[in-house]
Image (cartoon, rainbow, N blue to C red):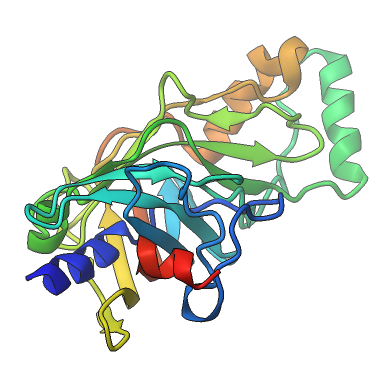
Length: 288
């Protein structure tokens, strides 16, 4: 029973998008457990380490579909009750929990012209940026709050297994450094499931999958491959902060029109595909 709970939790921990840690890891496990360098072993409640990598899929907000082409890493740990299967997510130690992995936005600002109602100084700035070839835009999903995790929901597939509150940063020389869809106070809520969705129209149901589970001989290390978490019933707020403090009043509406936001539930989709590794704390510590 304990092994089944362990395996289910690994699958369930999958694809809480992850974090690229830039600092040196505080721990140095080796061998099978080498990816758990940022496991929160300093927290006495951590009894399971998690390393999850999203390698494909896409996030669609409004009219813009952004494929996941750069891996997104989740790392951290779980406070797992082996008797009930209840678990609480614990953020990474010594590094980011969710990697800031920029994804190219297809089309970027190519072909977009400054609106005629903009003041001349803003139109000149925008057009000069575009004329210099700075049309590319990247989209980076960042955590905007605590992750919610339900083992029972993950196993049954009937309810959200993982709820990710996120904000999406849009980056381009013209958009500035604080152009976000969603915020810490008003995040995009992604309730991801391994089952089949039941979205409002115009979206139609899509299905996820728990993937394939393999373990080491002792069952203290589990890897889940080919997992798929989905949702297409969440809403997306409009963008804010684009163009900086001086021009966000004008640039935010342009970004919203390009992306097609704010967009109600039933017009957005998240599909996250990848693998997850999980190791029990004593074996992770023993491998250092």
